[in-house]
Length: 161
Image (tube, rainbow, N blue to C red; front, top):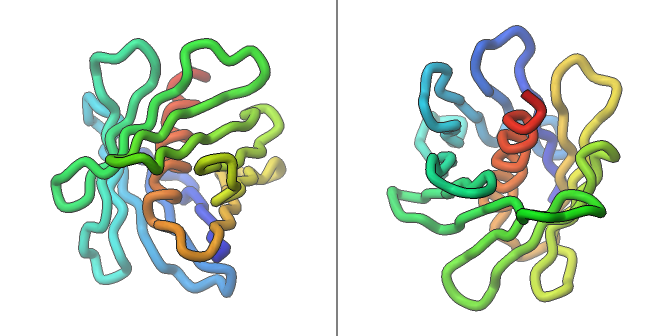
Protein backbone atom coordinates (compact mmCIF):
# COMPACT_ATOMS: atom_id res chain seq x y z
CA UNK A 1 0.00 0.00 0.00
CA UNK A 2 1.22 3.52 -0.72
CA UNK A 3 0.75 6.47 1.62
CA UNK A 4 1.64 10.15 1.60
CA UNK A 5 2.39 12.01 4.84
CA UNK A 6 2.12 15.74 4.31
CA UNK A 7 2.64 18.31 7.07
CA UNK A 8 0.17 21.16 7.08
CA UNK A 9 1.66 24.54 6.24
CA UNK A 10 1.73 27.38 8.75
CA UNK A 11 0.92 25.30 11.85
CA UNK A 12 2.72 25.62 15.17
CA UNK A 13 2.39 21.89 15.78
CA UNK A 14 3.41 18.76 13.88
CA UNK A 15 -0.05 18.33 12.36
CA UNK A 16 -0.19 16.15 9.26
CA UNK A 17 -2.64 14.30 7.08
CA UNK A 18 -1.89 10.81 5.79
CA UNK A 19 -3.52 9.94 2.48
CA UNK A 20 -3.62 6.77 0.44
CA UNK A 21 -2.36 6.57 -3.15
CA UNK A 22 -5.77 7.74 -4.43
CA UNK A 23 -5.45 10.94 -2.40
CA UNK A 24 -8.13 9.98 0.15
CA UNK A 25 -7.36 11.03 3.74
CA UNK A 26 -7.03 7.90 5.88
CA UNK A 27 -5.37 9.17 9.08
CA UNK A 28 -4.72 12.49 10.78
CA UNK A 29 -1.74 13.37 12.98
CA UNK A 30 -1.88 15.91 15.79
CA UNK A 31 1.17 17.20 17.64
CA UNK A 32 1.33 18.80 21.05
CA UNK A 33 2.93 22.27 20.83
CA UNK A 34 3.86 22.95 24.45
CA UNK A 35 4.67 19.36 25.41
CA UNK A 36 7.91 18.49 27.19
CA UNK A 37 7.94 15.25 25.18
CA UNK A 38 7.75 15.21 21.43
CA UNK A 39 4.27 13.69 21.31
CA UNK A 40 2.07 12.85 18.34
CA UNK A 41 -1.35 11.25 18.17
CA UNK A 42 -2.51 9.39 15.06
CA UNK A 43 -6.30 9.20 14.70
CA UNK A 44 -8.65 7.80 12.12
CA UNK A 45 -10.81 10.23 10.17
CA UNK A 46 -13.61 9.87 12.75
CA UNK A 47 -11.24 11.22 15.42
CA UNK A 48 -10.62 7.91 17.21
CA UNK A 49 -7.05 7.58 18.51
CA UNK A 50 -5.20 4.77 16.76
CA UNK A 51 -1.58 5.22 17.94
CA UNK A 52 0.40 7.61 20.11
CA UNK A 53 4.11 8.44 19.72
CA UNK A 54 6.10 9.90 22.63
CA UNK A 55 9.79 10.70 23.06
CA UNK A 56 11.43 9.10 26.06
CA UNK A 57 13.07 11.89 28.04
CA UNK A 58 15.94 9.92 29.57
CA UNK A 59 17.86 8.14 26.81
CA UNK A 60 21.34 8.34 25.27
CA UNK A 61 19.99 8.53 21.73
CA UNK A 62 16.60 9.70 20.41
CA UNK A 63 14.11 7.09 21.62
CA UNK A 64 10.37 7.00 20.93
CA UNK A 65 7.64 4.79 22.34
CA UNK A 66 4.76 3.81 20.10
CA UNK A 67 1.60 3.09 22.08
CA UNK A 68 -1.65 1.49 20.96
CA UNK A 69 -4.50 1.52 23.46
CA UNK A 70 -2.10 2.68 26.18
CA UNK A 71 0.18 -0.34 25.66
CA UNK A 72 3.66 -0.07 24.14
CA UNK A 73 3.75 -1.92 20.81
CA UNK A 74 7.21 -0.74 19.75
CA UNK A 75 10.20 1.27 20.85
CA UNK A 76 12.23 3.06 18.20
CA UNK A 77 15.72 4.34 18.94
CA UNK A 78 18.45 5.85 16.84
CA UNK A 79 21.66 3.85 16.77
CA UNK A 80 24.48 5.59 18.62
CA UNK A 81 27.23 5.52 16.00
CA UNK A 82 26.30 5.21 12.33
CA UNK A 83 29.02 6.67 10.07
CA UNK A 84 27.35 5.71 6.77
CA UNK A 85 23.82 7.00 7.27
CA UNK A 86 21.11 6.92 9.88
CA UNK A 87 19.94 3.68 11.49
CA UNK A 88 17.06 3.09 13.85
CA UNK A 89 16.24 -0.06 15.80
CA UNK A 90 12.52 -0.74 16.14
CA UNK A 91 11.97 -3.18 19.01
CA UNK A 92 8.68 -5.04 18.83
CA UNK A 93 7.64 -7.61 21.46
CA UNK A 94 8.75 -10.99 20.21
CA UNK A 95 11.34 -11.94 17.60
CA UNK A 96 10.15 -9.74 14.71
CA UNK A 97 12.13 -6.53 15.29
CA UNK A 98 12.45 -3.99 12.49
CA UNK A 99 15.34 -1.81 11.39
CA UNK A 100 15.18 1.50 9.54
CA UNK A 101 18.21 2.51 7.48
CA UNK A 102 18.88 5.42 5.22
CA UNK A 103 20.34 8.83 4.88
CA UNK A 104 18.41 11.92 5.93
CA UNK A 105 20.36 14.05 3.42
CA UNK A 106 19.34 11.72 0.57
CA UNK A 107 15.81 11.49 2.02
CA UNK A 108 15.58 7.75 1.29
CA UNK A 109 14.96 5.07 3.95
CA UNK A 110 14.03 1.39 4.04
CA UNK A 111 12.50 -0.62 6.86
CA UNK A 112 13.57 -4.25 7.00
CA UNK A 113 12.55 -7.25 9.05
CA UNK A 114 14.96 -10.17 9.11
CA UNK A 115 16.69 -8.85 5.98
CA UNK A 116 13.43 -8.47 4.01
CA UNK A 117 12.27 -4.99 2.98
CA UNK A 118 8.84 -4.27 4.46
CA UNK A 119 8.63 -0.54 3.59
CA UNK A 120 10.39 2.16 1.60
CA UNK A 121 10.29 5.84 2.50
CA UNK A 122 11.13 8.81 0.33
CA UNK A 123 11.03 12.46 1.36
CA UNK A 124 10.18 15.01 -1.28
CA UNK A 125 12.94 17.61 -1.76
CA UNK A 126 11.15 20.51 -3.42
CA UNK A 127 8.29 21.17 -1.09
CA UNK A 128 7.44 23.97 1.34
CA UNK A 129 6.26 21.40 3.86
CA UNK A 130 7.73 18.00 4.65
CA UNK A 131 6.17 15.29 2.47
CA UNK A 132 6.98 11.58 2.78
CA UNK A 133 5.99 8.84 0.38
CA UNK A 134 5.70 5.48 2.17
CA UNK A 135 5.17 2.16 0.45
CA UNK A 136 4.48 -0.89 2.61
CA UNK A 137 4.63 -4.55 1.68
CA UNK A 138 1.41 -6.60 1.85
CA UNK A 139 0.55 -8.00 5.27
CA UNK A 140 2.45 -5.38 7.28
CA UNK A 141 1.19 -3.29 10.20
CA UNK A 142 0.86 -0.12 8.13
CA UNK A 143 -0.05 2.10 11.08
CA UNK A 144 3.05 0.98 13.01
CA UNK A 145 5.26 1.67 9.98
CA UNK A 146 3.70 5.12 9.51
CA UNK A 147 4.25 5.83 13.23
CA UNK A 148 7.93 4.88 12.82
CA UNK A 149 8.28 7.32 9.91
CA UNK A 150 6.77 10.11 12.03
CA UNK A 151 9.07 9.24 14.96
CA UNK A 152 12.09 9.36 12.62
CA UNK A 153 10.97 12.79 11.40
CA UNK A 154 10.69 14.01 15.02
CA UNK A 155 14.18 12.69 15.81
CA UNK A 156 15.73 14.26 12.72
CA UNK A 157 13.98 17.61 13.38
CA UNK A 158 15.26 17.59 16.98
CA UNK A 159 18.84 16.86 15.84
CA UNK A 160 18.80 19.61 13.21
CA UNK A 161 17.81 22.26 15.79
